[in-house]
Amino acid sequence: MHHPESLQTILDFIREIGLSVEPKSLDDSTFLPGIHIENGTVFYDQEKLEFPGDLLHEAGHLALMKPHDREKASGDLEPGDGKKMNADSTEIGVILWTYAAIVHLEIDPRIVFHEKGYRGSSDWFIDNFTSGTYIGLPLLQWMGFCKHQDETDDSVPEFPHMLRWLREPDKN
Image (tube, rainbow, N blue to C red):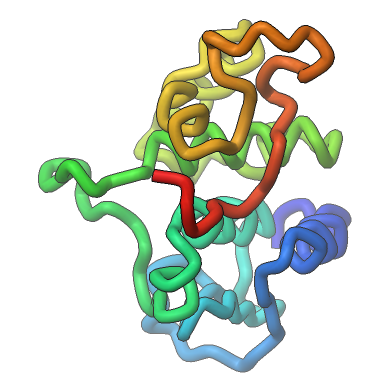
């Protein structure tokens, strides 16, 4: 496993925000090595898990779902091969949510944006996000995760500060 020192930090965070993550022996047929989602629970097999940061990203998929969809979510939550993206895809929001979690946890972005992920665009995401170019920010604002660009309350910090980590039932 790459970055085993980050596993417990990521597991604790996922649980603290209200998502379920549990150890389980998994076969090799999972989309990501050592990770499977069933009925809103993220299962992980520590022996097969390659990148603990993948758990954080998969939790982001669940976090952006409305609660009634989250509790039924199972299988591969990725949007496909990138050629079949549809209006319901939240992948760019999930990626940015994941970056906010990285900042919150004060972990190296390469733990999540590793060399085997993001279709070879890991460096691009890291460069954009660390320079303050937040692709996907309007989606997170629209869903109520962070301060909206039109909000004038200066007491609310700007992104990557999050107001909440899970989508609420009444938020778009």
